[in-house]
Image 1: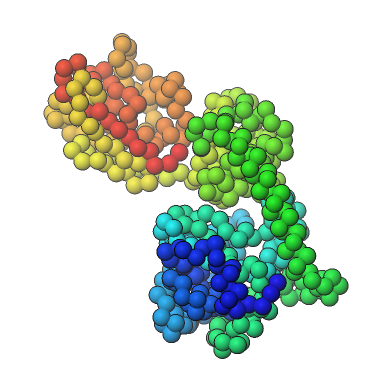
Image 2 (image 1 turned 45 degrees about the vertical axis):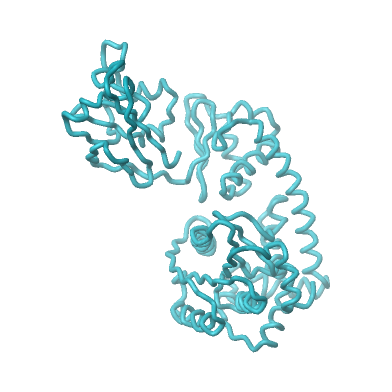
Length: 438
C-alpha cells in the first residue's frame, strides 16, 4: 500500500488509459469523491453516474449534492433512479443488482465504469466470504476488472487504503456525504469495519496487506482452474447455452461444479452459491429420465430436457394472451419474445394466395391445438408434434402460431399445415422466427 496522489492514480489507471470514456460510479461518499476528483485532475474523459436507490430519506439531498459537485468540476452527471425490492439474498444484494443493471445499460462499447472499492473493502469482502464458507473463487475477493455489458467494470483504487483516500480528500478540501448506513452495526460489512477489523489489526499488524496477498494467491489459483474449465467447454459443444448431461457426468464432482460455474460466467451471469449449485447439480444429473429438473437462482436458471442442460434467464417472459393481427408485409415484433417475418420465394413456405384471401393472426398456445402435416391423413396435436421434434417445453409455449382465417397454418418456422403449403411453382412466403430468449 502506498500514498495516494494523482501520480499514483495515473499508474493505477495505466491499463485503461486509452478508453473513449470513463464513467465514475459516484455515490457522493468520500471514496467515490476522491476517485472523481483524481480522474478529473488527471484529464481523463470523465462522466459521472449516480444511482438513487430511494432507500434513505435524504437520497434527494444526495442527488443535489452530486449535481453541485459535478457542476463545480465541469463533469457531466447522469442520475438514475432504481426500485429495490429485497429478495432471498437481502436488501444489500438487491441494491447491488439494481446498480449493476444500470451500469450494464449505460456502458457503450469500449467504455469503462470505475467504482471506488479500495484495499479495506477488499479485506472486508474476504473476511465476509471466509465467514460464509466461501470457495477459492470467493477468497480472490474483488477483481480489479471484468467485462460488463459492452464495456468493462474497473476498480483502480484497490491498491490504496481508506486512510490514503481520506488524506487526499482532506488535502484537497473535498466535500462528501456521510451515509449513516456505513456505521450501522446491523449490516455485516459495517460490523466488521467498526468492530472486527480494528481488533484483528491490533493483534496482527499489516492485516490489510496480509489479506490482500491472500486474495492475490486465491485469484491466481482461481484463474488456473477457470482456464482449465474454459478449455473443456471449448470442446463440449457448439452452442454456448447447452451442455449434454452425459458429457458433464464424465467428470468428477469437483470438476463438474467448476465446469458449471465457468459455463454460467461465460454467459455473463453470476453462479449460484456453492451449496445450491452442488445440490442442483445432483438433481440435474441424477433425476429420473421422465423428470425435468431445474436449478433457479437470482441470475439464471438451468433446465434439463432430453439429456441436455440449458442455461436460461431466471424468469422467461410470458406470451401475449390475445391474438396479434399481422399483414405479413412488415416484421412482427413480439415484445421480449422475438421477431416474426417472411421472405418471398417460389415453391416454399406458405401459399401467398392463402394469406391474401383471409386475415392473418398470430396467437400463442392455449392447449389442444391440432394440425395436419404433409403426408399425414389426420390432424395431430401440436404438443405431440413439437415433442417429436425435441422442442423444449419452455420454447413451445413461446412459439408463434400463425392462423389464416380460423385455421392453424404454421408454427413459427418449424411446421406448416398441408392445406397452406405452397406448390412447386407457386409464390410462397417463408417464415423466419428469431427467438429472443431460451
